[in-house]
Amino acid sequence: MAAWKLEENIQRDLEKAQENVELYGGHVVKAPNRYEIRTGVVVAARFADKLRRTAFAVFGGVLPREEIVRATSELNKKIYEKLISMGVGKLDIVRITVEAIIEGGKLTFGEPKIEWFIPHSEVEKRVVECERRINEIKQKIETLLRELP
Image 1 (cartoon, rainbow, N blue to C red):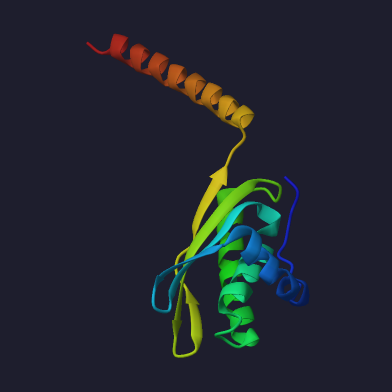
Image 2 (image 1 turned 180 degrees about the vertical axis):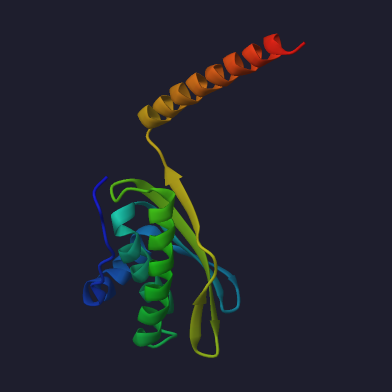
């Protein structure tokens, strides 16, 4: 698995923000000052760009640019750490959803929900491996049961 890292290109994201809203939507208003932000299905290495673009599109007319950059930067670091700990590769496909709240001119994100999409071929390999392990465990149990008085 190749190593990957976060990259920030704020100017590019500002330029792409409106296009992102027009093409993908990317958010739901849940209540006054409470939103749900979504990346849609995206290659893991690009999640940060999608989140920033959506945040700029949604909050650009409401919050200062610096506040959006600060909040999304913190969120992206948190998500990156979670992706790495989950073993997600940079070319794997994910979808991230997170709640956002505006209070007192500050943007705060809740706990992100990360969905990791695994290719069918990989699922098949994992199923075969699980079946092999189950059979080994069954054999060990049967051996232990035979040894009992």
